[in-house]
Image (cartoon, rainbow, N blue to C red; front, top):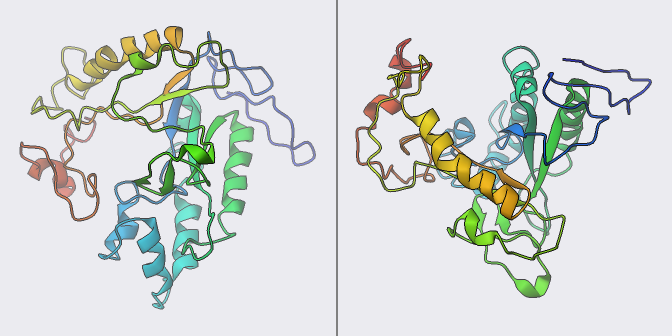
Length: 295
């Protein structure tokens, strides 16, 4: 790892997060370099299942819009919209071994940022920018590349966080949410074009299967997680690799090898789990033992 931070030379791009990732001053080769990333989706875009602690304070909040309204109306000490969101922005990432060093090990991360468009929106304005710049500064220091998603920007496929909108072609969108058709169906999409990326979101959670295989079994590998790590690689790896050849740049912008939707607010506020098994163990986090936690 090569870290670079010089306030007198802020555009120094010699930093490198690890031995297998090119430094920032070297062009990325999509045909050879691999993206090993983590999504910091809950930093600036507040969805209930990613930032549940904020929503638990306000039972009437179902999305960032309603959460912002309720926070703004809360005059309790230490509450209010700005105070709570600044505390969230300031503590979401902790520099040190437990966070940034782990991100450096995988070399890249994606960052979602909501963009206000219309008058009357309740979101906190003109505050998070300094925290965005801080993340950029850390990324430059540690040699991390950022995949930036301007979430809810005008004419985007999503007009409110967590609320997809139909594509309106007369507005000229270039970002399409085209349902569950599989990456193979895009192989001949706009042949000969460039500057196109295919973003797929693979999950086991929503496949409708019982998915009862336990997490604590090591599947003969000596590693926790049961069958799920290997199953994720076997189920998703070949199709994504094929798409990289047949289509072009293909990434999994969201993915999880979690096998049930027992987590808090996974299906939205007020909606229970569709999982047909027993969720009691999964939600009783206070009593997880040392065998279950690593899994």
